[in-house]
Structures are given as structure tokens and as C-alpha cells.
Length: 637
Image (spheres, rainbow, N blue to C red):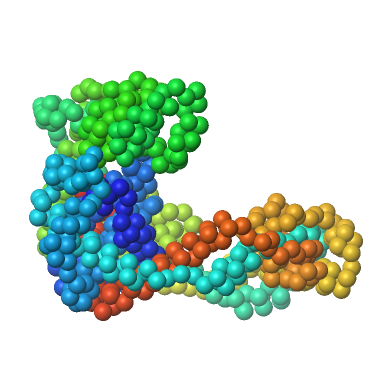
């Protein structure tokens, strides 16, 4: 939050470190450092601790950043796909590691030095270009920090900047690397190709019994019946706990009346914001834009890019500056505002879309409130039921009796394998957590009481193993059909490869491409000039990559998309990369420099992690993420 609010643009650490550390965690594997530490702490690195509250705030900051970027609040499932949970944790761990290193190096920033940095921050300067105490205090009120806490946080950020900037500032890719990468990427080739109809070309003979039995004997491992088990399962799910909870009409109405605003659907507006250094510049731009026939064209002539001025679809509460928010929500659609002097900048505003809001009635949200209240109370109900089940288990009661007593789902599963399937290949139990239950069934043994299985919704499953049927070899007579099918497929693939190799040999010996294609019953085709990353119609990326390993005039074959055939290719032409434009060179230099910085920073953080030691409390992380409850929100309310 501080990073995105306190400056006109994020500092290097906030802009670059986070994304780079995601790469670092992908390399090292966060799972390798998941260990139990103190229950009140989510993670430790060296002597530094990261609390659950700090993680939740970091997650909230990530979500707020993405909301501003996309113009709307992401769902929790979308956030999970984008790796928000991992990014938030990586950011905290990396910051703690660098802070630890800064202390080891005895780096410090004096009170006078940090005061001067804050005073010179453009975000805290008034129209006269001087530090504004009023702007600074207003900013602190917005983010909910005391001056002392902000100074402490800012000092830590500046020290991290010193370390990371000194580490990365001298990096630059050599020109030879830039040239080599450009030549590699921009080389072009023209590829001749055809795909034979192998189903017509390949004729397989029916195998006799001796061949099939020989194949069976050589591949017995493919024809075994997996270990199977008979189990009993007692389920305690969140839904089952919620069904036991009753919420009265009075409670529903009280919850609605206590915070009606919470159930509003706020008015949303798609806002364009042009920022200027002062009011005079904004007034000059207003004079030009208010007369422009084509607003987008006129904005472009002023030097603004669309990506810089489009804020997206926002509710009033999503906007940081209340003055600008008030002005934006007072405009008519497509109306250009007069210059608005916000707390941090002077802007012009334009609203291009208005989505009306709505106050939802009690009847409309009654079900939603009931679900929320029941969900809030479900944790206590789950805990009470869990204790009751464990007490009964301790006293020797079977799962079926416990299920009947507590009116919980009890399942008798006569046949299940490690994948959760029956011998007929059907699901052994229709349960979202079948995989976890099957794993638990195969981690225990008959007659031994196992620990309860944690379910993603916060519930549990208890599994008793009643009978174990070991893995057995299926007799030939039982699997003769499967043996024949696998034998024939193996023979088909062998013949396919042999035939494709013959076509390739003929081409490499100089036969005309069209002649060989015609005899293969296929049409000879040719691509235009392609690069390594091009996907021309009729060729897989594998075929294109293979073509770039061949000299001109040479042929090869590559698998088709479905894997049942092979495409014959030949390199017809090779064109070296044309001379690069200055823009291409600059883009490659930027890309390589970013990769060098990423690699260097990843090694740096990895070294700090190895030096100081990293531990993550798995249970605290699970709870911070809402108990891994699918698409539900992390516990950051």
C-alpha cells in the first residue's frame, strides 16, 4: 500500500523485486521450506518473524494493486491463478531477508537523511514545489499510519533500495549476447511438408497366439490388478455443520439493519484521468480538449498514452483521492471536467461509462446473510463435532455408530484403489475430496485407527481399513483383448516410424519432394518464411523447432498433433536475420537486462535464505488462506 501511494511511480524494489521473487520461489520450491514453527508466526528467516496479520495485509495490498490495474476486484479464484498468495508471501520473505542483511552490513540511514528524503518526495510537495505538511498528514490519515511508523517503514524501504540498486545497477548484457539472440530469433526459414495417410499405407497382420503370449510375458507389469481395499468412511463437512445451524429471522434482520450500506451495489464509472504538474497546465489542456472533435486524438497529441490515463471501472470508494472521486462522480457521461486540484495532483476527468448502483432489499440479501452467519458459526460447530467424534473413537465406538448418533454421512466402500476408482473404473465415492480419502485409505492398515483426514473446507474424514486385497497378476486369458490392442498399437507405431524414415531417406538422397509426397498419398505444401516462434497452419511447434536444426535441403519427420502420425518436413530456404532496427536492439537490451537482474536477484535472495534459514508454518499459512476453502476469500476481512 505504501509503495503504490507514496510516490508518482513505484520504487525499483516495489516494481521489480516482487515479480522476480516469484521466479525465485518457482526455482527453489516453497514446499522445501514448509516446516512447523511457532503457531503465532507464519514464517521466520534468521531472527526475523513474519506474522499472519502481516501476510494478510500483504495479500490485501496485492489485491488492491491488481484492482487498480484491471479496473475491478478479482475473484479469489482469479487471484489464486495469478499467484497472489505466493507473491504476497515471497515479498514479505524477501524483504525480511534483505533487512537482515542490511543489519549484518550495519547499513543505516540517519534521521536527518530520511527526513530529507521524505521532504523531497514529489508526492508530498504542494503547488509551489515545496514540502507540504498538510499533504503529508493527509496521506498518513489515508493509510492509517502514525508519522513514526511511516518513517520507520520508509527507512526500511530506502535501505532495501540501496542494497538492491547497488547489486543490480552495474548489470548490462554484452552486445555479443544481444546480437546472438537477435540472429537466433529473427532467422527465417521456408519449410516444405506433407503428412502421409498412414492408416492407408500401413497394413498390419493379425498376430498369432504365440506372439501375444510372448508380448504378455515381456510386459506383465502392464497387466496387473492394483491393490484394492474395503473401507468405512465418516464424513464431517462444512456443509453438514452449517445445516445444523439455525439463524432466526430477527437475527437476519438485525444483521441487515446494522450495516445496510454493506449490501449496496455501488454506482461504477469508467474514468479517464489526465494528470498535470500544476493548474495552469491543466487549464491549457482543458481549453484544447473541450473544443476537440476527436477526444482520443487530442489526448494523444498532448503526449498521453491510453494505458496511462484509463483508470478502469471503479466505485467511488475505490478511488484514493476523495476530491477527485467527488468530481468524477459528479460528471455526466462523456463530460470533461474543469481542472480538479486533488490532494496529490491536478487532473482533468472524463467519464465514459456509468453503471448505476442499487440498494438491495432485505428479501434480496436474506439468503446471503443467512449463509454468511451460518458460515461464521460453522467453525465452532465443526470443532464441537470433531471433539465429540474423537471422544467416541477413543472409547472404541465404530464409525457407523458414531455417524448414526451424530447424524453424519457414513459410507461403506467395498472396493477402492489408490486412484479412488472401483474395479470397473468408476468413482468409488462421489465426493469432492475423494482423492484425499483414497490416499488416507492406502496410508493405513487394517485394524489400525488412523488420524482424521483434513478436508479443504475445514472439515474432516475418518477412514477405517477393513480389508486389503494385494496387487495381483491378471492371467493372459483375462486380458487377451488388452494385450492384442497394445501389441497392435506398438506394431503400428513401429511401422509408422519405419515408413516415415524411408520417406525422409528418399528426400535426403535427392528425390523430388512432390514425387515422394504423391507416392505417400499426400499433398505437398510449403510455408511462408517463418521464425522459430511461428505456428504455420499444418505444422506443430515441434516440427518448426526441428526444421531450425536442419541445414538447407535436409528432411526429417515430426509427430502430428494427435500423435498418431508423422509429418515429413524439408528445409527449402534459409534467410539470415535482417539488420535490426534501433527499436529492436533497445527492446532486446531491456529484455536481457531484466533477465540478468532477475537471475542475480534470485541468486541473492537464495543466498540469504541459505545463510539465515527459512521456515514457514504450514498450519498458519493454511489458516491465513482461509483453510484452503476453494474459492473462498482468505481470512483478511
